[in-house]
Amino acid sequence: MGSVEFEGLWDPEPGWLNTASYGLPPRPAWEALQAALSDWRVGATSWEPWDESTIRAREAFARLVGADAGDVFVGSTVSAALAPIATALADGSKVLTDDVEFTSNVFPWKVHEDRGVEVVAVPGSELVAAIQPGIDLVAVSAVQSSTGVVLDLSAVIAASKKIGALVVIDASQALGWLPLTVDGIDALVAHTYKWMMSPRGATLGYLSPRLQERCRPSAAGWYAGADVHGSYYGTRMELAPGARKFDQSPAWFSFVGAAPALELIEQIGVETIHRHNLELANEFRAGLNLPPSNSAIVSTSLPGAQEAFEAAGIRAAVRDGKLRASFHIYTTLADVHEALTALKPLT
Image 1 (tube, helix red, strand yellow):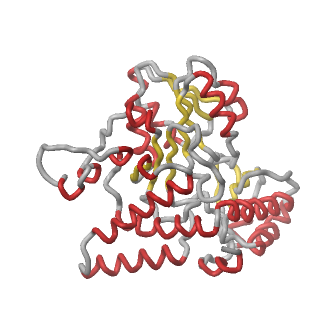
Image 2 (cartoon, helix red, strand yellow):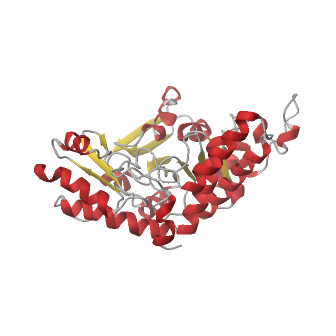
């Protein structure tokens, strides 16, 4: 799908530079959600047609990350998705993370400190060097939320493999624009409401077969059953094979919106989105006299930037005291130039 074909699939108000906070729905996702809400309002259908979207989203996610759909589970939040992995860690395990890691990939490990699990945080530039014997698990984001720094994933995987450490990746700020696969990764979890442009409440994750064997599906409910319709009542439990036993009962409408959005990302192509996003992010960086980067997120200290953006109607974010602007497939060159014009008096 070329750029001309997909340009009209979004309806952004000019000046939206905040996809790192939440993405804007493409028209197929928005329309599917409105149709489901209309059916819900009048009781026009059972829930099974909505649940078909969960299956479609699982399969699209698996294709995006190069995984088998049988190794993909569904849920609602990143932290809840990571909880079974944290519970499976042995007492006294050591977890390594980035010192600016988003807490959804920190707190699930830290709540086990009472049984000796230790979370060690180092600056991102020192992370690979810190993957040394004694580290049991590396928990880190593929792209950092506050800074936009893109992880050297291959280096992290190689260093972790040498010492037998597990690799757990939060891809919430990466999937949808950054090409990556699960090769060499033990767990990859991502919420879809940012770069995958879906409603909040649809999280998907990959669990390697070896990690599935180590983890207890402690949040198992009827939806984790081998036969969901046969798992409503009673004490007989037969859980689904593969990663589906880790499913949390899905928020139907979130997945109704997620399935078309994920499928559209496939149609456009992550490489195409990646190229588009970096071109605009680096155009913005050049206008601020910053060197080019490999990230769709630009983080910079510029006193007065937040006020200048607000006055011009530009919607971005401030994270860790810095201006954070993020550029996605619906961002235009006009958005970039409008933002630079607003900041020009400050540069």
